[in-house]
Length: 168
Image 1 (cartoon, rainbow, N blue to C red):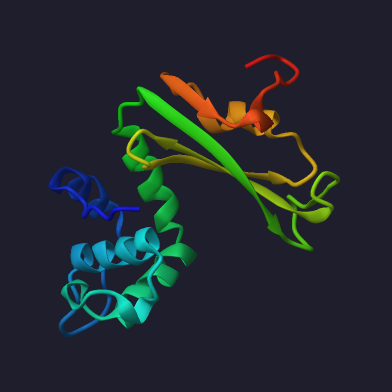
Image 2: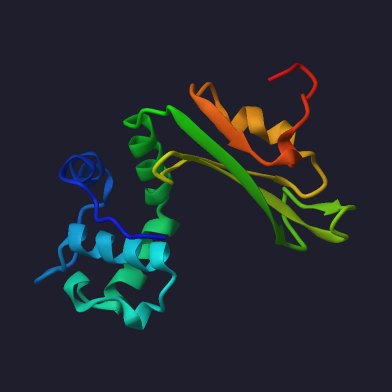
């Protein structure tokens, strides 16, 4: 996947959602570090292979974990998704092998225990929603929750090709 840095508009939406620094002394710019995190997550490269223009890979990795623990990524995703137009929407899922947790079920088709993660993206591959459900639940049950009234043309694989009770 091709990497694209955050636009000025996206950065203005995200900036107020990031936690205030409580560290004395110089601090790496949040925008630069955020682009570094997105670079690694988009390209799939190793952290130590992140270009130096995005500051230290150690700083990016630490902030990724810290912001994840503080729930920053959920707020950022919701804020960015609310600013996007959705003419084209795509959804797909993946079974994650898990043995414990609230959303764990046995997938009889794949013969594995785990949770199913459903990701809805727009035409630019920007995530709009992420929904997690048990592995033994049919994909169509989480489709309604994932698209949540997002208009546009929907692309999905055959796993979503049925109507759950109550319709879509």
